[in-house]
Length: 146
Image (cartoon, rainbow, N blue to C red; front, side):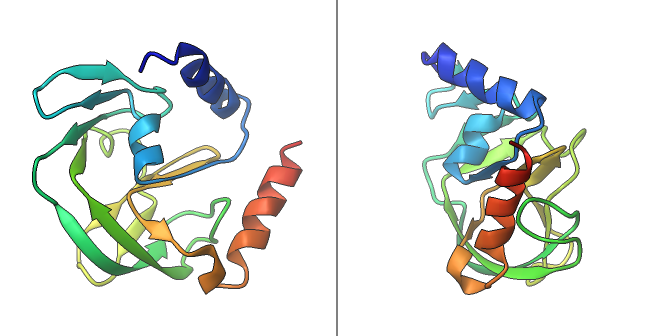
């Protein structure tokens, strides 16, 4: 929160349309605020709407099959990929104005993450080596943004 120059730089990069891929803690950092266990709030990068709220118990753990809802720097719309999640926080108020990134196929009705212009953010950890197209697609998106 106190690293204002980093938060400003990330917001500026997003505003310029640079691709941003964030997993778990990165997803939390892109939100407007983080709320700790005592209820104190801290400013985050503010690229995505919402607040990440820390909990004292694990909220989720496991491998998931995800279907991309939109074409992004990582996947084309409709593509599937495996991911892992393990987190002690939840995102509040993000889904009201920003489209979800993924449908969690093994948990019907559950949507995950956020897509905003060239930003892809989610609690899911995706192994880029698990699908041959993932890393090259991410690198190409970054190269195209130059």
